[in-house]
Image 1 (cartoon, rainbow over the protein chains, first blue to last red):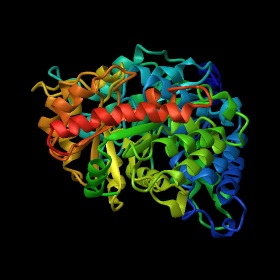
Image 2 (cartoon, rainbow over the protein chains, first blue to last red):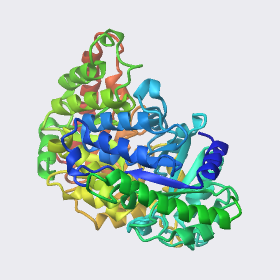
Image 3 (cartoon, helix red, strand yellow):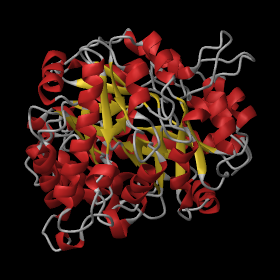
Length: 277
Length: 277
């Protein structure tokens, strides 16, 4: 999916919602545990209930990988049913030396090799340029590089500042910008402090940003939009728990839809406020 | 495997060699390609030919993951045959927010959940403390945190320096040191410049270091030992291509053994020079 297609989906669905698929056997409804593949069964119903309300899905790879071979099969089946008119993001936080990142890129982007056909993958930038560029060589695929995350540990290194008071996450954005373009790079920026987006936009005015941390983690959608939205929206705001675990009963998909509608309505208002709709 | 056991293996095998299992279908001998699982068949012969000469094996997870579910099954079978008297390292470069790193830790450390029983995993530190600590909660298991890597891109961010000329990789070691101990933390330090180990040892005098970059990547074993070895050896030096791809013929395992013996002999000389043997 390219940048224009993504923007068209945002306009047409009046939404920039990304639904996180952190599917956890200890949290999904009990009646699904008897299924042959409970994780896939859960995801299938969640996707069917939300696909007209969101523009992206983001399976968190750890939640599949922790079940080894079986979990990777659940991931493959999930990837297969994710609608092609959504941005299918592998939240994998990969990154290694060049020849190894090339293998990770095949793992998530080349279905002929791996069986997986994601559109985007999250990347940890610590190992630098050759760890990122192999993901940029696939047409209409995206590397979503960690910049400023929303977890407690984000402050340990991401705020490490140089002589000129430039922080590591700013240096990451400035350098990574030169390795690709707004057509194949996005950044992960946590939503815990909406005003931080002013600074992010000084470094990456036009890039799409993948934003976790709204909702359960305490970030405000209004602030994120106020400080982070650009003329092409430029935001994919992720919500996981509030949607996929809205109910632990047989009505889980229906309740997930109700929660997704609430978020979509807020997003529609923000898109109107910005003049995009 | 704990620290004492690792040191005992080093003394008993007169070696601190780690054999990398970056098993690549385009590089293994052609006669194996007809096997049901060529990657596993290759690894099995390599392990049998080298297990008395090395103290660690390090499958590079990308080389398995790129084949999706099937690759993860090759990884599971490989992990199963890695000798328990070697440190079994998953070279995975994982790292995510706390609850997700916990799932990655289960993926590699908890065979009851995932089928994989590695002793150690490589970790990218960008997301900070809560991304690392879940790996430290398993007894006799290790987090091997990226500090200074040997690839071209290492300079992009790892050398980013603060007001006091402290570089990011030094800050990583100093902070990560406080999250665990020399009994559950190691660091990845590339061997491209042996003298860099003087500085590393100023920050981590007692930790084990996992050292890639000797051999094919140009680092010198002698320099690494001169500047990096401590009283308990403190080094695991990785070699991959020079050993596992020593021959592409039917004699690949025999040739791998010959190469491993050469490295082991050099290591024995270094251990004697240091007074460890």
